[in-house]
Image (spheres, one colour):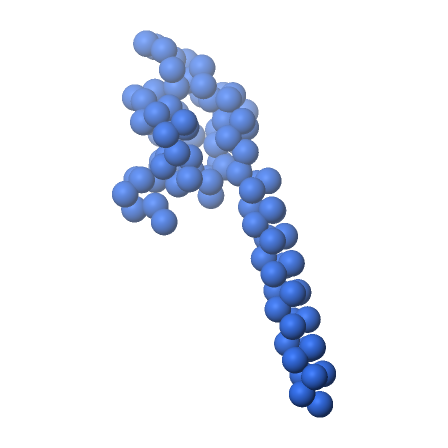
Length: 102
């Protein structure tokens, strides 16, 4: 009886690990910073144009990923540019403060 209970627990642990791995893969696929390239012309430059709907839609689709982008030096430098604040305002979103991101 103890062996079957141990087997059951082991099976449940393996199932949980597989499910957690699938969730992490799903999250990794959802966070795609390349989707924000449509916003780059609106962020960089001296007088960037207003963002178009593609930029705003892509930005909104990545809203759950913005904390990781802001904290990442490769992407954060763009999100801290003055043009990024204008894009965020025009798209009616707020970039998270890296200090409060978890």
